[in-house]
Image (cartoon, rainbow, N blue to C red; front, side, top):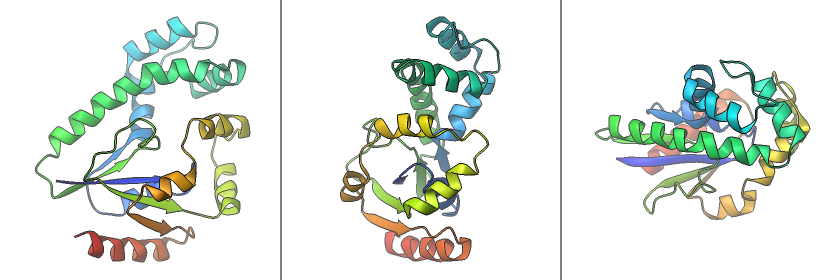
Length: 189
């Protein structure tokens, strides 16, 4: 099974690229959303580490954002609880899809969490900063401070590019990106 990882800046369109390969996708952000909505054990752990902020189940993203904005170490506390759960979900996904010809890993902190394997094929999704900013502002819970906090824990783009096998330029035009994905698929397979 080929493992194809999609990496890039926050808001560069990684998930759109990942979903258009026509392969099974492990989307770490979607898994985190499911965990916040359904995992009572995760809620209890977060509530015990951040009792001033985490009050309700399912976990309210606004509570998480408040906790991150009000304490430098709170993002680390959240990461220490959520990442092991996501890793477990990833192992389950890999086991379930072990007989597939290829799978897509849409994991924003792929390099940072040392999830890269020697034979993984890594695709960096590149986009202009002004286009990324425009897209990020359209998100329901947009907060510059939160985005900057997450950027601090990510590797710089030039390092990610350097460690990638392919770079796909995202101009946020569906047809263009889909055509680029088709070309990439031909090169990979």
